Image (cartoon, rainbow, N blue to C red; front, side, top):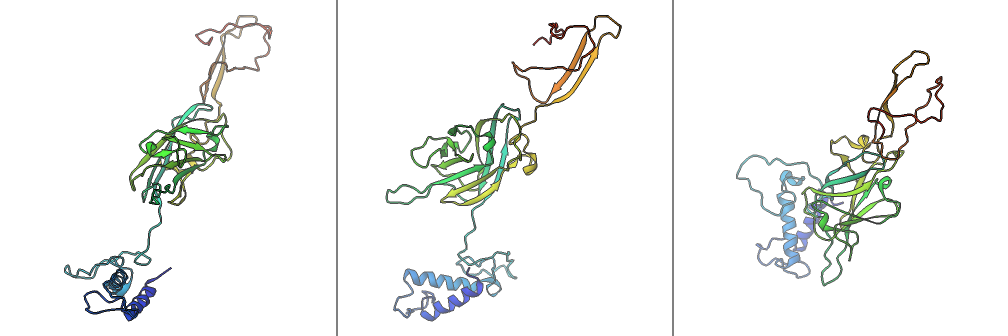
Length: 313
């Protein structure tokens, strides 16, 4: 990596060769006879100027990366932020926001998962020019394998950026993503997603019948022309990985409470039993409710019992 001292040495070498002399210095030419007015000469001259005017005698100042004269009209020393790197340093692309939300935590129920993200740079296929196929850029969402269908395929996408995505780099289906064998959800950009804007995609899945163990940690990554390592997807409340009960670990089916009451304790009397209960998930048609432990009654175990109070469903 080129540091500030390296830039000073490079600037001195350029000046010695004549390339680093400003075009304002008439008749300047390098050792190779190339005039300073050439493209290489102008670039070298601007680089040397930037090194010369760097605030604090060249220490990563506010104008360290700018090819412009220092403006001292305001007076006083410039306030220099702590930035590192050379004048040509490039910041790594990163997700500025990465969140996930859901609509259902019912085992086996329909669930809509929404991914919200914002990136520091444009996400788009790379233009190779000359009529060549563009270089692909795609996003990869990991940690949803418990919700991926057993037969991998495509899934329709909804949301603001869905129209800019496809299930293949070329000739794919617009507004679709594809489930890969490892459970990753991949979508390719066919159009640009603006930098620093908030983008959303939503898709429908079926929740697993039981919570997965251990709970996965969902992430989002960008690959291809833009490379961003896997970044955690946080819940909309910002709590992080600890709140994944609804997205990646459905509510365990269980009784929240249960109670049995009787109408009479007299020997040989008709007795109406009342069973009250509440479950953590809905009980669909076809579910079986079994009550055990009611022993001591002369009523045969095989006898049909009439259910009352609207509970016959």
